[in-house]
Length: 561
Image (cartoon, rainbow, N blue to C red):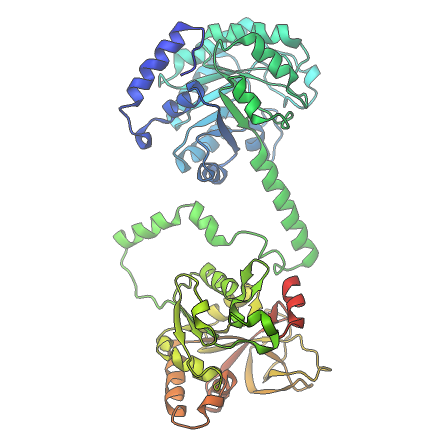
C-alpha cells in the first residue's frame, strides 16, 4: 500500500487489505474494487464509458474500472455537458452500466448536482445502483465543461464544497464507497497555491482522493502540484490534453489512477460519421457491411447466449434444420504458376487471408460451422481448424460433380455449395440462405458481353431489374459459353439446396456415377438436371461484388477487392 501522510487512511487501508484477502475477487464489492485501485501501490487505469454497451466493451478490453463520463453520457443523450441531462437520467445510465459489468464505476458527478443535500441523495442512490464511487468538481452548478471558457468559470467556495464532501461521506451506504474531489484551480487559471489549498481542504473534509485537472498540453502544472503534494493522499489524473506525457512519468510520481476520459465516445462518433456518410453517398449498404461488426457481435455483447440457454431450460424446443456448407476446392489452379506449386488454389493468400479462410469466415458469421471441404491437389495443405476435409483422389481427371460426390452424404440437410476459388461479399450468402426455394443459384448480372471468355452463363425468366419488388426470376438454361444478349448473367459458384433438393442431387449423383461420362460433369450439369426435371431453380441476382481467381492477372483485381 502507498504510505500516505494521514495515519487514518493507512490504518484503514491495512484493515481493508486483510479483509479483502478473505474475499474472492469475483465476489468483491465494486466499492471495494475501486478503493483498492485507488489505494494500492501500482498505477492503475480506468476507461470512459457512456452506456451499458460501451461499459461492457471497457471490461472486455481488460480495464479494472470504468469512468462514467459526464461528457460521454450527455453526448450520448444528445445534450450539452452543462447539466442539461438531469441527475436522475444520469443515474439511470449508471444503473445500466453497472448491470452490464462486474467492475466498478467511478461516476463523473459534475458538481454533485446542487448543494450538500443533493449530494447526500446522489451518494445514497449511487450506492443503491451499484456504483463504486463518485467524483465531484469544485465549480458552480450548473457546470460547464472544463475545456470550454475555463478562465471564466467561477469556482465554488472552499468551505461550501468541503461541506458537500462531508455530507457525501456521511451519507454513503457502503464504507468503501469512494468520493474523489476534483480541483479546478488550474482550469480556472488560479495557479498552484490555490490548487494546493483546495486539495488540502478537501482531503481534510474526507475526500478519498484528489483529481487534479489541467488543460495545458504538457504536464508541467500537474507535476508541480505532485511535487508539493508529496503523497498526502491518492491522486487521480486525466491526461486528455497532456497525452504525450510518458505513462512511466506518472508511475515515478506515485500517481494512483489515470482516467482515459472520453476516447470511446470520440471513437464511436468518428466511426458513426464515416458509416453514415458512406451510406448516404452510396444509397445502399454494400460498401459498409464489411466495415462494421456483424449484428451477432451486438447480440454477444448483450449476452444473448444467456437467454438462449434459458430458453433451453424454460421453453419447449422445436426441431431445427441447421444449414451445412460444401466447398469444392480440389484444383491446383495451373494458370497461377509457381504460386500454387505447394498449395491448392483455395489456400492462395489474398492479403492476409487465404481464399478459403475468407469463405469460412463468411460462413461462420452466419453461424454455419458444419463445413466440408473437398480437397484434391495438395490436400494436406488445407489445415484450417474445424473443417471436415474429404478428398477427390481423381481430381486431375474429373470435374466438380466428382468432387461433390465425395461429400454426397452432406446433402441430407439444407446445404450451400460454394466454389473454392471465389472471393465474394458476405451478404451474398444471405441471399441464398434466406430464399425459401429448394434450389437457389447466385447470378451476377454485370456481364461484359463483348468478351469472348467462356463461363457458366444463365438464361433466366426475368432479367435483373435491381428492385426488391421485381418479379422473381428462375433459370431456363445454363451453359459453358461466351456471353451474349440472351444471357441474364453469370453463375458465380454459390448454390443452395434444400433437404428435398439434396435428395434429388444424391439420386442424380448415384445414377450418373455408373456412366463413363460422370467424371466430366460439373455443377452446371446438376443445375440443368433440376431444370429438366421441372424443379424450379431460383435466381438471386447480384451486380459485381465477387472475383473468380483463375490466373495471375486476376490477383490484381482480387487484392483491390
